[in-house]
Length: 183
Image: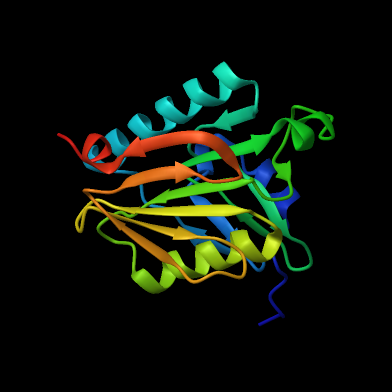
């Protein structure tokens, strides 16, 4: 048996949408399970509010689920957050519309699915932060909590009676978690 060669971001991209059930983590393909009803509703609700805020204030661009970000090279890591935001400064420097986005989002949002382990979500948050994301929100529908990760700071856990805010990444953005978790 020959040595395994790590998969690159370009190889993942050539797989096409029909096969895009993977993220790429340090050259290894990691299966991604399709989202369930609650997960989809939370991601859409948060994404819609985020998109409307970003557009109204001209802050950059909000992206939907499965937008690929190349976080690391050699071996490559491509993550696809459930919701993400890229500032207008970074957007202006990007160039081509095709392909994965080179570099991290300013904000990455992951909504926890029933099959996501806490350890995997912490690895994702660490990948985003190490690549340069300024803010990561891990939304946990089961506990009705949002875990807020910022570079060099302790994780902040918000409960469903708190208000999520965009800090210096999305100044003025707020969302009461009771609205996010309302069914």
